[in-house]
Image (cartoon, rainbow, N blue to C red; front, side, top):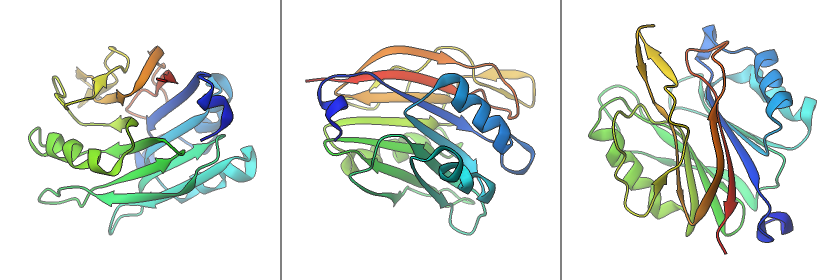
Length: 208
């Protein structure tokens, strides 16, 4: 882990479902990064054009397409990874094989997720993640989950605003942030543009 995080310095994580082909452009992503100045950016439904981020911004980057799909989870970070990001398979539904992207920063880990729509299945997927994470852990992304998460040991610290409008009508809070051994300092949902999801930004500090 970097010395700054070990000393208790705050760090900011931003998450955004980009909406694949018809969603946020590379310029949209850069606009949000330059505006919010996050330390880590988690993206869902990210495709190949996003791969140029480290050429533009420096830092560290990885993208993991879903099995058999051109899109998947991607991450960009100012903070170095302790080891290259990995992925774990999640309990699958009938159609889409889901994975979670796991980032390791030493004794702190972060999971970038895009969970299934089934409300029993997506909670099973969350429970399956915890074995792959350190004591200090953050799970963040598009949960596709309605209502309380109820994941033992974790607290839902993301913004309370609705982040998605299903069929452009029903507002839902699908984008979440769960933490264990980490304190939230600030959480907000950013204005909607480019995608059908609002980006969310959470500022955190590791517990001693």
